[in-house]
Length: 117
Image (cartoon, rainbow, N blue to C red; front, side):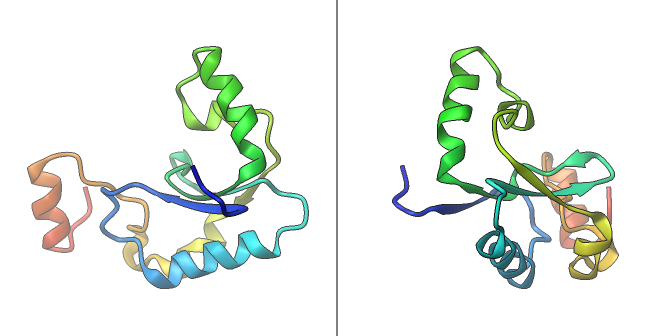
């Protein structure tokens, strides 16, 4: 539930996200003319948990959930998605770690030491 047109969505297990990157992401959304979702693309694919979504995505996502769709990017099929290419976000990702997440204690210790998985 949000009264805002654009909503920033980030996972809680992304220790390398920076305020600078989030400002760039939000600015990109506010400047978008046709997009309803702004998602960066990494080597693994789209990064839906470091993205911004317009509230116009609500109904297509709601319908996808009703059909049993659980993968976020599949639920965006009815939305106009603008991708942010790696060369656009990598300047904000020292070591390329921007979207690395933490799933285990070992991941935590690696992140705390500044190491990559």
